[in-house]
Image (cartoon, rainbow, N blue to C red; front, top):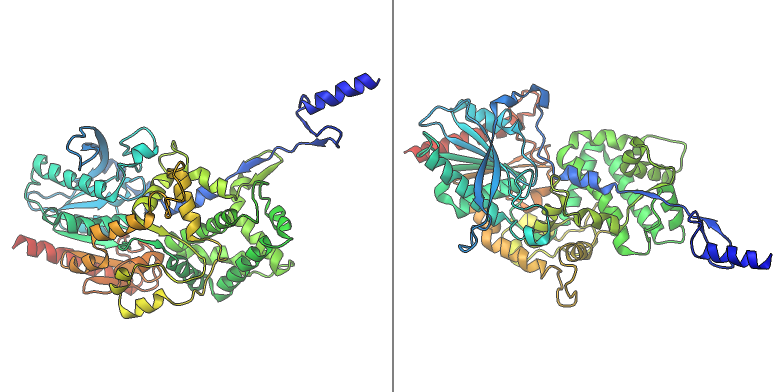
Length: 540
């Protein structure tokens, strides 16, 4: 009997009974295998999608749009590199009236392009009025325009704004050289958000190839610590959802941060059904959690601000719960919908850890969403890291001097909306390093991936920041929504700068609509008049 007991203990210790977990001589417990669900993906994808237009997919005549491909050099700046790839672009020539109808090009950004912008929207309407031909070009390494088989670092080194602008220049030259009736045609560029930045930068680098441009919601100053973004998101939440909503959101997130640093952290994590790999004492885990919450509100503030009142409703509706419990219920709605809509195993959990966030950016095979590619550009060109920790801006003095006096003061004012004060610049620097440069010596790379701050400085030097944008106003018109979180790094004052009240990011791309505000429709009329006037000047 004693021998049999020893054999049984030996087998348990060797893990033969996989459903049991024990150390020899200790109580045997059942092992719980949790199915981890990563909720961060959905919100990141929302932030990187093509700016939405009102027209539904079913109402568009997609057969009017042709899908075409153009061979591009992999590296426009290395004469010894002969590798090429195929860039995807779309065309609608229904309204073309050669030989004088202009070329209208909507520039793609960090998304997969679709026929929508060639079938509806303000640029489409302008092109139709002036007998133009419409094109929509896809940015390298986004959508279906892939120069490589995956998003490995050795491939992404060919991803940059500078290479994308060279692609666009080659595209225009090829149109004029090979398309009938386009050799002497004027070229109008339009873009939104990052692609709006490309329009402005293209006008600076290739002035001979553009007649006029429209840059909607374009960020123009690269910077490391973009804390103004979440401040503006907080203001949008208050504006659309009411002060009660923004106040409860702010106090609730501060309370969550405090609880995570207390002995009651486990109760909060259990209530949210967080996976056991989350360490509340780890600042990177806490940063990932609050970054995820911030991304949720950023997506609404940036693209769906008209829906904020509805997402605020559960937060301000009276319940039988105390404030803390009610707020936890609210946070569940942010992270749980995917888990509740799909049939998972009984023991599922939400992975809100830093490792969960990192796993999204380290995936080299998921190509369509643009998540890894955009983060690569952030780490190597732009920064624009959306932080919430307290402290002064780290904007470079030259950037500050380029801003009006009122904005200089705003750069140094305390934040009203903290969103929990957990997302630091170091969190993003760590992510950049482990995702794209995991074998680097952290002591030698203070900013990770080399020094991000140097890359940011080089971007501003190359494209000129706000100073260059001011000089481009004879050729490019800039529009912003007053509520746009990106407005803080865009051109906000000038002769051909329009700020539209009560509107957010890229809200002016739709067709003129009498249901819109007077200010919105006046802004669109000004855009149309500006493009028309530049075309007339170019013709003389």
